[in-house]
Length: 231
Image (cartoon, rainbow, N blue to C red; front, side, top):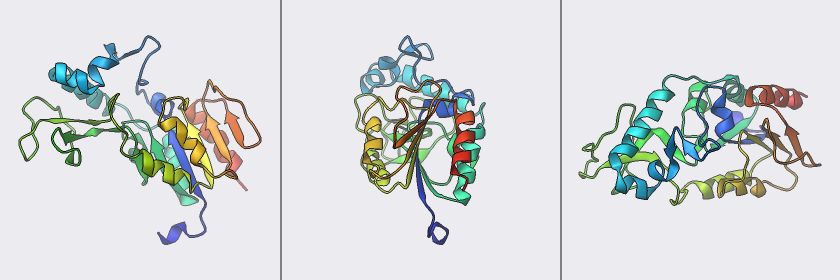
């Protein structure tokens, strides 16, 4: 922790737009489908109860896709900024591209594709990189499920994320509209004097005295942001 002494704390909130240039499909298309599936069928506790095989196969396919993509330059740039800043990334993404790029402090609000957990004990979480099928069980004999926060479920790390935002010297938002709660409320926890930056190709807000909007995709936006950071 010694290297953080005197370093400014850069808190980064990332969403689907962060990974889009890596080839990761955004969470939902305009028609409300996720990879051709109704999200209510594959991303809810009810969907899992109704058709667990469909849900497990859906996430198996997402897991396979993840091994076919790699971090983009925006992921790499964020990781490199750890040389000059204390950085905490709070992501809505379930991929591991931040980690693969070298970022060391990442909080996954919505879970992780490469982890599974027991349907009996939410705290029984383990790494999982192959297919998950019916019959794969935890140590107590209960079926394993994707370690993903589904619609209708609580977001266990949201309180921790809010406390982190309260300590931000700089807040950076990349590739998320910040319209989906509870994650959308995180920016309001930053101190009033904290400058904020918003990178998105189609921003839904405008720059203000405190907020600088950078209307670019993640890679180009990060390049401009890093120029702003230069003394």
